[in-house]
Image (cartoon, rainbow, N blue to C red; front, side, top):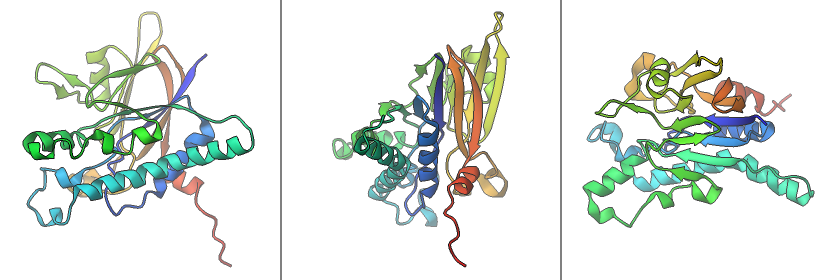
Length: 261
């Protein structure tokens, strides 16, 4: 039987953000009940460990504990609807919904490993186990590990060449990997399909991002990109059809009705 997979791109949770949009994502996934949820990495931003703008005015006040707290708040928002659904189902003696959850660590979470490597005093004080993943049932995969589910490869991003540089676009992804592949890491959404000699379809998908904030480093024009999730339907041995769902659509779908007269 063909399966369905929900793909959640980079969230890059930061302190002080409103994560209502993630609760909307969770509500939608509980409604659709895909067999798998795949989070493609960079769920936390870890801006306190960023080397990009270190030393600037905007860097002031950042703390690792704030980064981790933001991650917990964001994950609670995403997973809340699932836990609530299963609690209600249990009380009413109805079938619960337990998707298989996979999370690939991204380069932002890898900032933690780099910080420990550069300052060994941090070793043992904080690890990936302190992040809000395992307690919600996510199977966590190391940065750049490639996982294969139903014939599709998933990773935060895919590399090419002896230098291990990220593949640049969806067409190149298929040309280099010769399999259906899905990745996050970059804000743009890009999709490419090709066909084998036997007529079966290969798809490469750059999934974009799943957050509502703008990034200052992208400038005035670079923040115009896809923000949402993807539903992969009729998944069978690497073949699938994609339905992209924007955060704007989800926010409108689950908006509280205006009760003011």
